Every structure is written in C-alpha cells, then in structure tokens.
Length: 276
Image 1 (cartoon, rainbow, N blue to C red):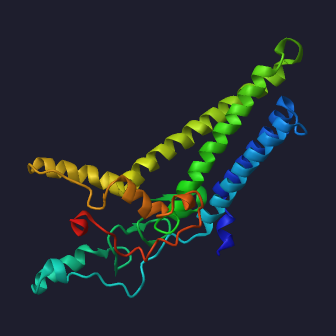
Image 2: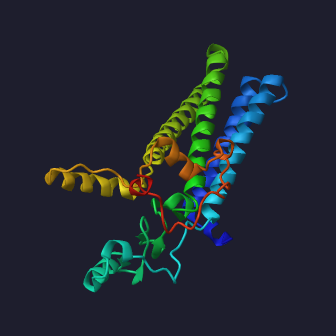
C-alpha cells in the first residue's frame, strides 16, 4: 500500500470536509435536536457514524487500490480476427498499441496522462482520490459515492429536522440563523452533487460502460447512423448481468468495497457476440 497517496491537497480537503460534516452533524445538530444521551439521539448517532465510517473506509480503499496496469508480457490475440494475413495482423496490432507507452493494451484499457500509464478498464482519473478509477477500484469508488450520498442526505435530514424544532422567536439569534442556513445549503449542495454522480454511475453500471466508453459510444453511434446502421455497446449483456460483473454475483456483498473476488485479470471481457 502506497500511503504517500494521502499526501495530497485534494485528499486533505476531502478528509477535512468529512470531519467537518461529521462534527456539525453529531456534536451540534443531533446534540441540539434530541441530545446525544437520549434513545433517539443515540440511534441517530449510531446510524450516521456507521455511514461516515463506511464512507471513510471506502475512500481509503479507493486511494490505496491500484486500478490495474497492463502486464509487461501482454500481447493481444489477433488470430481470430486476422486469419493468416500478416499485413492484417500487423495493422490490428498497431491499433492495439499505446502510442505513449509504446506497449500493447487490451480492450477497455486507456492511457492516463496523470498516472503516465495505461489503466485497465479505465473510467477516469479522479483528483479527489489521487488515483485513477479503473478495473480494481471501480467498485470501491461506486460504493464510496453511494455511502457519501446516503450520509449527506442523512445529515441534511438532521439539520432540517433540528431547524424545524427550534423556537426561533426565543433562540434564533442572527449568527445562529446564518450558521443554520450555511450548513443547510452546503449539505443540500453536497447531496445533490453526490446524488447526481451516483445516478450517472448507476446508469453506466446498468449499461456496463465506463465514462470514456460512453463518450466513445456517442461518436460510434453517430458514425453508425451515417452509414445507415445501428450501434450497440458490445459489452452490454443486460442490466442484471452487467451489475454482477461490476459488483459481484452475491447481492449481500454489493455494499462492501473490498469484495472483489469475482474480478479476473481485466484483460478480457464477455461480449454480446460471446453470449449469442
């Protein structure tokens, strides 16, 4: 594990935001709303602490997990598509070669300019985890966004509930009102941002796409329409099958970021042609 990855201003910012949200939610708003020593207060404390802990753990997994690099010994198989024509073989090999790395790359792998290497099933490079999101840490990234969304929504609920139960005629000084408004706006904005990101990646998982493949698919669909054909993403095997390929076959383990025993080597993937 490369702990040096945590030495990053964006990561420090994320951890600071997590700590700030946890502090105000638990020690200000839950304490002010129900009190931490009451049954409702203890239940809210335990629920939010669990979500925050899972969020922090998923974040650490995202940062420390290598997204997947292409083995130096990798050589693409062009026998099936090229037959015995040596010129065709050479052309196919050139198409599968990374110009920057000067090495061969498998399907769905892309070169990351930040990491300066090819990443297996690359989705994008994420500044906030100081790492690429690829084959081996995509699930933990998705789980992180899921827990982050739930924790933000729960914090927003607590802040709004606390605001509604206060008697602002007697307790509502102007600085306190401003503080409540700032916290509410911040948490609503955070919930909306993370919720939108979660929705986007749910869509990608259901279609078995990466962010890069989505934009490549737009161009491929446009070119197909120009030639009077239709385009279908080759790795889309159906919603449920697509979800199990990313999250695993056991639904009970979908929410655990390190449960990736279902992943193979990231060099080959089932396609529609294989299943037909």
